[in-house]
Image 1 (cartoon, helix red, strand yellow):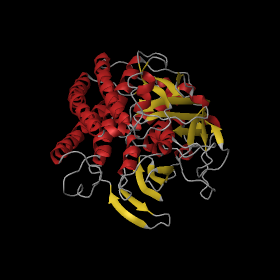
Image 2: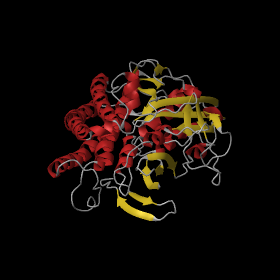
Image 3: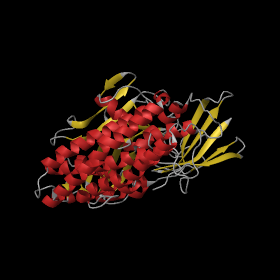
Image 4: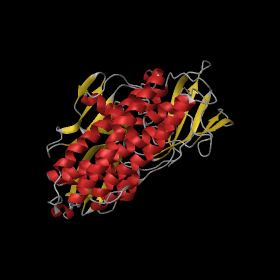
Amino acid sequence: MKIKLDPVTRLEGHMKIEVEVDSNKKVTAAKSTGNMFRGFENILKGRDPRDAVHLTQRICGLCPVSHGIASVKALEASRNFKPTGQARLLRNLIQGGNYIADHILHFYHLTLLDYIQGPNRSPWKTSYDTDMRFSQSASEEMFDHYLKALEIRRKAHEMVSLFGGKIPHVMSIMPGGVTKSPTASEISDYKRLLGEVRSFVDGQYHEDVQKLASVYKDYFQIGEGYRNFISFGVFELEGSSSPNLLYRSGRYTDGQYMSVEPRRITEDIKYTWYEGKERSELRDDNTSPSLNKANAYSWIKAPRYLDIPHEAGPLARAWINGDYRKGVSVMDRHVARMLETKKVANALSLWINELNAGGQEYDSALHAGYSTGEGIGVTEAPRGALVHYVRYKSQRIENYQVVTPTCWNVSPKDNNDRMGPLEKALIGVQIQDINNPIELMRIIHSYDPCTACAVHIMTPEGKIENKFIVSTPGL
């Protein structure tokens, strides 16, 4: 029997999951489909390279800061430029605030309703009724925290806006540094907001994840995947070279910790709706759609590092940095994300104290001079490893490629027919209620592909057997 979850919406558009289950209701095959063509790479061709930082932030309204930083780092790499210490601090403070807002959003507003019953009123009235283990009073308490998290997330966004200008799509991050010169008043406001956010993160968020983990202990054994991880590192320390980062770059492959070089990334398109070489390096990659391609089932390419699929995200960063290595599962991803939020919030409290009012944060020499060049910019978005590649000539972009965290995690099969990490994590899952496969949703959401709004369960013939609404209020 086939089960189709369609659509499962996420930041790049809509996602469909299709699984096959045997007579024992165990998943034996899985396909992850990106249903929408993005095409940002094609939009950027022929544009001024300096436009990229603004256009690429429109890829995602949840983590635009990371796209902006990856984009400017690609241009700065093409000019062999490294920003000043003050600009480094400002970028960290902007990106760190976005991290906190995004992780709080994920747990409380995109995931928690997979495990608790919301209020018996619209828009929460229609929700899951399978495997709900919290008591009514415990669910009500958790939901109170859901509402509080909306306020805390707003405060985290205010932190970003102080130095970024606005959120989403910050304006101050540019090739050459940061165009915002902070005032003493803004630094004071950031500290105040951060104090309120840290109080929630260290208290309520930490406690709620621990409660969830204790009630759903079996989810420490569900949704494993490949146990391969990749990270490009994030949050530069002391204006140093890339090894000195709050989260260092690296990979964990087949039980070994090793270094990572972005230029060794390839993308496979055998099972995607694209034409061209079935495997390409970033500098030779292209984005040419082929809608009627045989055997294709996704608009997401299959990025691989040395031909191997890797998981990206908070759990990957935790394993590579030694912060958390207890397991690889649905619940381990939630625990790692919470611990990361605490670590980033603590680092922000140190960086804001290093920041000086006024001073030079932007080198105007990088405002012009983009005749010929190429560069790779890497960072870590909240959801994982992010790469931007740019090649330009005569101040016009010839090729631009983006590999997002969701591409790593939700990719289709590659040229060797190996599944993507999410597809792999779904294999072997035991479904309790075939008409309400909550186990699948919990695994999907643990990778943080945003949210799902309506799910249909269908027969292989396409007949709808059941329909249930995935509650996602507040968005």
